[in-house]
Length: 468
Image (cartoon, rainbow, N blue to C red; front, side, top):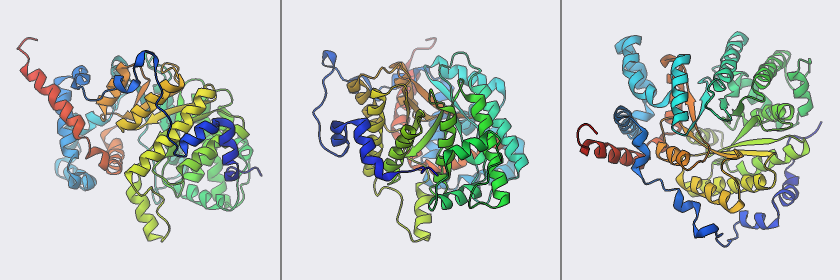
């Protein structure tokens, strides 16, 4: 069987693709600042200090954002948001609960429930110079597995997401997100991860299974094998529906299942990414192994001759990952500090940008971060490398309802910028929102700057003469 990962080839591959000078810089050597035509730099153009970015928002949207962000600034409320929501719902009933949540938290972070509401939200994004990236709020963790019938229902939801993503004629190069545990049980992903530490699965076997061949995968029971085959065929249907239409960004999840998720994602890439990157993988830069995982992905795309799409994130499961590592008496998989994570993110960013500058048709990247420094760093390197921001090879991404001062500024400067937009009913999206709030609570508690800019814009409007 061919190996999925070949760490021994990292150095050879890196030198071949990136060049010695780039490697020296990525390994910590300082390089002289590049000069740009006219003496200007993208750093000067990308200022995120101007509240005028919020002039496109209505008065009601300003008030709502300030209220929601104020709520999110209290750690106790965010940490116990699940219990508070359950209590509120039990006291007010389903209808009363919905009446409170819909115009506040739901409206801030969710695109809508009906197709009409989603279409309006997507059109609004387009009118602001932003691009919608729809996300079905379905995922599972250990102990939450459901039967094949429900997984098939989830498949229909994913196929509907594909259809909705390309329904807006104003959206150029549509994207959507996919949680693989919505289609394959997390227990199986954990089992596969364990098996991958001892043996590797040939990607060709997975591709053949996607096409309907009855493959028997070593190490799996008959029941597990049958479920894996069904899961691969479900993912194949998503790939067939989306190719040449919508780019599918597969989310990373927990380290105890990520190797299995990457294995299946690479198999999808091998099948669907022969000429262009339609299936993308996610790399979590708060992990100590993130750089080697990214190089593994690049290595595999070269060996297997497919295009690589990369979603670069810092990561959202830090507390749980560290807690599990402590309980299992194994090394902490997370970088020891915020600064180390920033270095990891920006270093991986440099690797991808250098690759794209040399092979723009083979590699694509979404800089998925709320960190202003990394956004500026990406813009600066793009200018140094002569990457056209309108080409689409590099784009940016943030969550709906957050970091709008960065998103709107990027859009106004002509950069492709996507907003991750979950959709569905209040009942369907609340568990998703609770998880995202708790995973991103450090981000939510650190949005003081965005609140300050919102307040400045609100005061400006309140000082305006009546009738203007």
